[in-house]
Structure formats: structure tokens, C-alpha cells
Length: 177
Image (cartoon, rainbow, N blue to C red):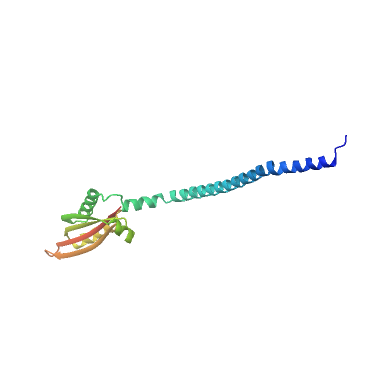
């Protein structure tokens, strides 16, 4: 049984047309899906690299825990006025000074000032009136300098009542977040 050439050509053209119209769209969809899979794999690799880098940073950050604790102690999250008052009382008495008065005021930067200066800190101003000797005052300043809390001396006025007795008006600033 011989198939005429004409029918054979029609069957071949029909096969090619079916291949083009049925297989080609599926092939395009397959190629598109394969490209999407490759893009998603690339995104996944990037995210895995980021996670690995973050884990490395966390390990490095954990190595600085002691230093960060010091920073947290010097710049507490709250003004902690009772602790600050107690600290001033302890520093003065251990230096041989007496506190005649202790007053404080807290300045909080406005949102505009925080953005302008990039300083989110609260500044607590401490006004102290101290009595005692010059040596005691030197010890007091030395201890203020080495205390865990960050304190800055802003102004001081020293006057003498008696030969060995000084009256000291001192303004300190303490910082917190």
C-alpha cells in the first residue's frame, strides 16, 4: 500500500502546523516558567547571603556586649533622677563635702530640634550648692569624672566663707534618652 505523495505532504504540513500551534505555546510557557524559577533562585540566594551576613554581624555585635553595657549605664533610657540624686549625695559625702541644695531641670529637645541637631537626648541640669574644702572639691570632681553616668560640668562659682571653708555653686548636665 503506497501513500500518494500529495497525502504524505499534507500529513507532514499538518504535523508541523499542529506542532507550531499546540507545542510552541507550551514551550514558551515552559521557558517563561524556567526563567521565573531562575530569578526566584537568584533572589533566594541573595536573601540567604543577607541572612548569613546578618548572623555574622550579630556574632560580632555580641562581642561588644560589655562596651554596650557601659554606654547604656552612662546614657540610661530614663532620667533616673532618684538615682542621680543619690549618686550626687554619695559622691559629695565621700569627698568630704556637704550638699546645701540640689535642684534639677530636664530639657527635652523638640522633634524639630532633634531632626536639626540629630540629638535625641534629654539633658538634665543639676544645680548643686556644696560646702567643704578645696581638696574635697577636687576629689568630688575627680569622682564625677569617673562615675558611670555621663556628667558634664557646665559652670562653677567658688566663694570662701572662712579660710578653709568653700561655698561652691556647681552646674552639671546629665544625659539620657
